[in-house]
Image (cartoon, rainbow, N blue to C red):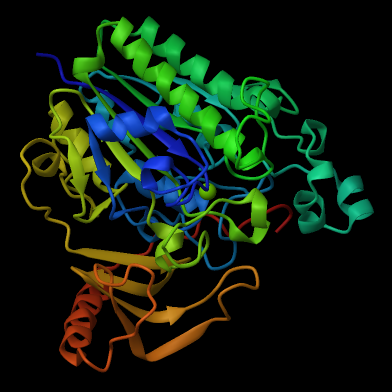
Length: 448
Ligand code: MG
């Protein structure tokens, strides 16, 4: 039998609490809920970083972004005047799957370097259609000056017009539209995905569909605009859900549903600084940009009818694990010349065995802020984001939480469990001794 088709649907800044199957009271996501009911809903699934660029690098390389140089203390993400991107020496999931003759597409937000040498086609993808960075970028200077800066422009819904965000839309390496018409961007990404599935139905394919939304500024097409009782943010999430429904339906119609693994997740937590325009991390603390759970734990669903054992999985998983898992499914050996931070999830997906991932490292830029080991998480440094949840604080002794008892990180139990802190400190020591940080790819911008 040929290896399965592989699809990742990646939302941007969608919070842990933003799907109805993850507890949202008014956002309706019937297609994702059905996907969760037929497949597996993962409640302890994480990303490699709590902001866009490093999180995407982690997913595609199976490595902590510090290793590839895709995290930085100077610029947390890439900007339209950034000079660099994901180094060609990194092996992406697309390049890895090319070894098993997969046809590969990246549809949507890239954010790993917008210059041609860094674009998806130069990183193992056969096809690209999308905005190469965040949808809130390229604001005209005149508008920024008139309104008083970035936050003033983006926070005011009256400025939410496509011409205020002059982001390009690319097809392969060519710009085809600028500003990208964001009113229907989610719909167009879905349609591109359907076309790619139909065109490549006879051979294994890998699709990395990375929606630009619900990252601000929010846009929805006529089909969903004004429909959700959650307001515009709900409209946007419901449009993504509608797209998921169409993708699953097309897989069925093409007879591919029994041989396709679909993973749905988000790149980081909700951007809480945008209040009602941002999402919700549900019962988790804080959001995007932080190393609290709300920044880095994301709603995740695996779907592969008749193969996956349906249920709720509370073992630890990470987007970085998709590299190992997909390599296994495609029958491609892992690269031996580098350190990966990737575990095979197939025993959990197909055999109901216990997970193998015990630890998680929570970085902010290139600094290690917190570590999870089993049920426990120690914070060595804490910091809020954009004026919320406090300034940078070195925690000595570290804060300690049992995430299974206390997912909201409310009750510090460090005094009660000094031996757990010692154990985590030893894990940190080994991790840091072996860490070889890549050269910072995010620091150079503009005329610097
Ligand atoms: Mg994001």
